[in-house]
Amino acid sequence: MTYAEFQERWEARAKAELANYAAMPVAELLARIEARELGDYYMIWPALAERATLAEAGWILFRMLESDLDYYHRYHCAAALLRLAGIEDAREEPAHYSAEEVHDVAGNLRRLRHLIAERIGGEGED
Image (cartoon, rainbow, N blue to C red; front, side):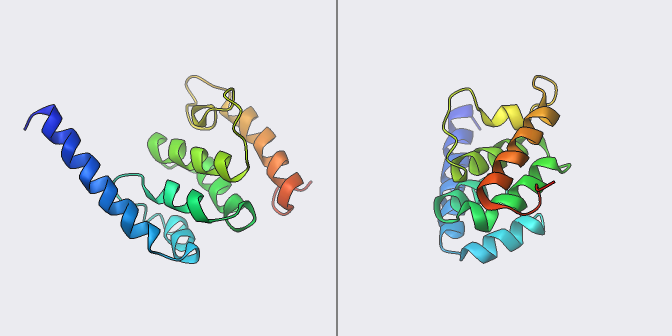
C-alpha cells in the first residue's frame, strides 16, 4: 500500500467515524469518552465540540486532559475543550495542554482549570 492509499483509507474511515459520532446524542458521546471508548480516528472530539456546551462537557474533557490518555487523544481533547471554551487565541494551541516534553502542561492546565471554573463553576473552584 502506498502512502497515498493509506491516507485515502484513513480519511474515508475517519469521515465514517465522524458521521457515526455526529448521529449520537451528546450524552452518549460523553459516556463513551468517560469509558475511554474513543474510536480509532480521533473523531469523537470534534463531534463533541460541534454540539456540546462547555457546561456539559468542560470538566469531563478537563479530566481527560489530566489523564494518562495518549498524546494524540489529549491533543484532540484539548482542541475540543478550547473550542467549547471559546479560546481561539493562536497562542493557545492544543499542544500546550498535551505535549509535556515541549510545554509547561501542568501550568497551562492550572490556568485552564481556573478559566473553566470562572465560566461554569464546579470542579476547579478553590
